[in-house]
Length: 376
Image (cartoon, rainbow, N blue to C red; front, side):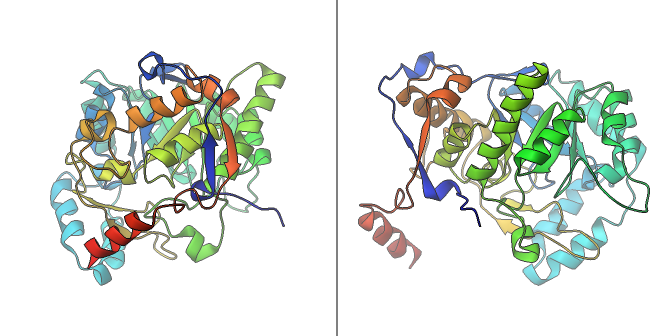
């Protein structure tokens, strides 16, 4: 067996030199598209609707809209959202299974994409491989900029007697870049790059609303997964002279986790938990796993994270909380500055991770006691 590590088990060692955080550049290039901040919002219905996608785009990030979600199934999606939010815990799974049986409508796919594009922001959408050819064509025709091909576990070789998506042919025929995922290993990441992926999503089961690890026992902790896939990115660059960004997807609950993801080799991070706490999120403090509505084997749950502030406060501050869930950009810039890195690529080279399972508990006895007291 190999030992694998998650965010709570490692720490970033500060560098020998430091730089002014105001001089740190955290912008990134995703498939030829420059983003001012390297944060992506997960394609989850409780996190991203057209309005949220527009707002995050104007704030410098990127929100990915789920083309197989309620926004492409219902005209009156706000009523559907309210029904999901108001349902009792024991009702959620069967309710979502029922709601997601409604067919996807082509006119609504076009409508949501055009709604985002008319506000002059980057439009990114997500689909499973089963619906990719159908929805990919509509997405391109509607002016979409990026297409995320996403499933719990995506590999370069899938064996089935049924008709399956030819990844190489699909990426070649798409007129827009295709981001592929999810995966957690060097070999699969390299395979997907060879098949034409313009970016790789890393993470199987780490999300707060995902239960894949509990249901299937499958997954790799995010630090190890990101390190492995970033090595594949560097190897692919040596072979093909083409840089394919790594996107650590899920498992981050605070600024420290985000910083550790970049220190592990991520070019971008994708998460839903932090964005679900924004007052502008469609789920109003609730969100649920993408595989929760599965008709045969649900792998997700609806969770309540509450509302902590505006999206701008969560991203840019000023922070009103001391738990690392606000001013995420300030936290990332400060981490880079303490390691002497002026940008994310320098951070990859200069950041040193150590195994430190006591990093969040050492000397924190009074903080722990205070939280217990508050809980009572």
